[in-house]
Image (cartoon, rainbow, N blue to C red):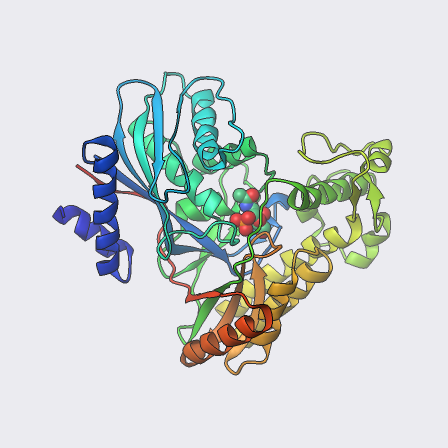
Length: 443
Ligand code: NG1
């Protein structure tokens, strides 16, 4: 293997020997498909969110960490505008398309549609005809980002493709524009998500979490601060193996409920645009303005705009008050968590994570029985200061704050509990914070 590539791999991953083999295997695989070696390799990481769930699309606060689990693109530019994509996992069949101003989605080709979404947003914002490339996508276990696990495999895939497309077409843009492009590309697939995942996948930093304010400032930039955990504690990630899907009902209903809350509050607080704007006002003083539950038709009759959210039907019932309560309280917990980390008060951080989980379970209703088994088990273990579901919910992963010397015993005991109580096999690993997306190597 090329020495520059080896050096680059060593600077990215804590354990580079396995990664060197991974990259070598993928290069061979690329050659066996395309008959030539790749000329460029890009990577983008998945993420775990320490605290701040479903706040990003409400212009709120989050605290994600970029993982060393990532999606790679091995690529070779073409002279025409065709994109050909293969995947190292044979369950994803080859797919190809031409870059143009109108790229239709293809039914039953979800993974290819992520590339179509990226090509579409770039084609829309570029003055020149974009050139295509042949690519191999690499995100295999245990190094890749598991799908449907709340670790943002979709954004890692979107961001690495955006890196490849933009670099190979000399399309240079500041980070805030890249975040918006990546987020728009995911909207193309139908999720009305926020910007947390794309931001951390682009701008994560080794060994730190990022406190991110998801409200763009007057220059359209996002304010961030790196935060570092006390070195005696680690984040443990446990994948329940229950897969979740954002494209569809539950996620968009939550987005709609928050938007309905803003619409109703605007009648009394005309200056607000997002739930974030209520952060300095007591919950008790405004919660009476929100209905516990209301249908889309009833809300629209009150002048609330719920257009442009896929899967929302007139009869859809939205639980406006509890959803808004979660977002309002979660923003406060993130701010308190930043302070707790700075004060080296890990016990308070653990309590805030526990409270965040209760709010996500009871007010946002995004937990599920398997996640509850993990949380209950973790809460009883020595060395665990707090735990919560991480990501969109309905399955996926739990993140726990654990005293370093208890990582091995907690992993073993929680794994046993989970297997015994659910019959499912969890995947458990300590969080290793990595840098954001990059060009790893070029020939
Ligand atoms: P995951 O967990 O990757 O599905 C989703 C959204 C985030 C954020 C979280 C909940 C996308 C791409 N990701 O993440 O923006 O809203 O849920 O905090 O929509």
